[in-house]
Image (cartoon, rainbow, N blue to C red):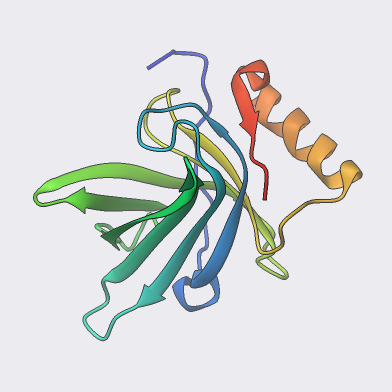
Length: 152
């Protein structure tokens, strides 16, 4: 992890409001989504408090789906979730910024500077909002030049 990265998370997160479909607007490149467009993540809260995750993306002429689960390991840190797509292997999922009023966009990262996503409830963000989010990401110490903008 780079020492100058600010990956603090939101202080409040209403999991019920966070559930549903999110469109990936931009991401850092990583092997799981390399070459994918039309990427979405759908979250649904289960009765046991765990979260069902369904990621979907278009690559090489076909839709690819992967199912996973997420959990909130520490209720005192609601923005720090753990997500798993493979048995017994969990990764950090940090909700670093969120439109608290409408839950219409989010910036998600991890405990390292290797993962970063801009998510939206719609397939695109207004230019002004996207510019503002990119500024905030840079202020946190992330290299926005590494972001890949996803075709939806």
